Length: 143
Image (cartoon, rainbow, N blue to C red; front, side, top):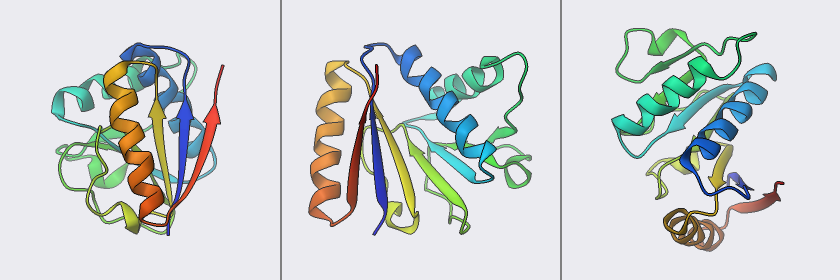
């Protein structure tokens, strides 16, 4: 079973959620892991892509959208379709409101909750489903 880390932000905005996703991506990358950011749709993946480009002026997180020719050669991918088959060292950051099919193939999964009502409702349902499926769910209240 996967370990699911829920990061609970005090903010309500999508920008705060994406900013924290960038921080988490940097930490995961620095530790030598691969990462797949799973988004609800291509528009959100493109917003996350922009956020990664603008995250820090003094750092670069090598990443690509899943439909890019570079997707196979970078450690961070952003997708919105079917989850890719993970390598042993691949983590999943789920920015989709639902739990994607195939999540059980990842050893580590991160979920980011902010205080926006739609996100709260969707991620509460995810929390309950993960628990019912037997995954280890670990909350991290930030701020």
